[in-house]
Every structure is written in C-alpha cells, then in structure tokens.
Amino acid sequence: MFLGKKFIKFILVGIINTIFGYSLYALLIFLNLHYSVAVLVGTIVGILFNFKTTGKLVFNNNENMLLFKFLGVYTVTYILNVSALKIFDTFKFNMYVAGLLLIFPMAAISFTLNSKYVFKEKLSECK
Image 1 (tube, rainbow, N blue to C red):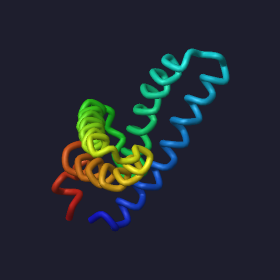
Image 2 (image 1 turned 180 degrees about the horizontal axis):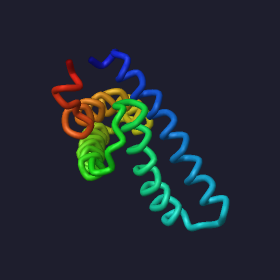
Image 3 (image 1 turned 30 degrees about the horizontal axis):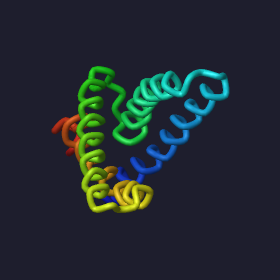
Image 4 (image 1 turned 90 degrees about the horizontal axis):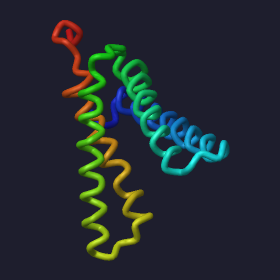
C-alpha cells in the first residue's frame, strides 16, 4: 500500500504543498508581516491548498464537505508528531534528526488516515 502509485502521488503532492506553504510564509515575511501572522495565514491557506491538491490529485475527490475530516487527520498527525518529538527530546536526541526520522512515518500515517477516513472510495468505485 505504501509504495503504490497513490502513495507516491501523495508524497509528490506533499512536496508541492510544502513548497507552497513555505513560499507563502516567506512572501508574507518579505511583505513585513509579523512572523505570527505569516504562520497563521500560511497555515490556514496551506491547509486549504493541501486539502484541494491532496483530494483532487491523489484521491481524485473534490468534495468540499470532507474538509472537516481532513482537519481531523491534520490534528491527529500533529499530535502524534509532537508526541514522538517529545519522546526524542526526553532522550536528548538531536531534534533536526528526529524531525527527519519522523517524516516517513508521519506521511504513512497521514496517507492511511486520509485513505480510510477522509477520501475513502465508495464501494462502487473499488470494483
């Protein structure tokens, strides 16, 4: 499942989403907005952008009503990521390395949750 075509598309779209989110943040900083505003706007617009690109390009689903479930997946993966980082920090692990080590597991969890709970295929589409 994780090395299938859909997961690879998920990773590629994730790279595009990351570039978009950081570029927006950098642009807002360049426009002299306070970093807290830049992060807030970047996060909100980034989530909406991620929802549309992930939904359409990975799961071929453009249903806007799924946004709340998508936010739920974002919340769960955020909590898991921060919890795992806290464990690494407890053992005085290098946090840059810890973040890198968690990229793939967090992507796998996010993909799984999005596949099963957000963009799940209807039974008629699976045939």
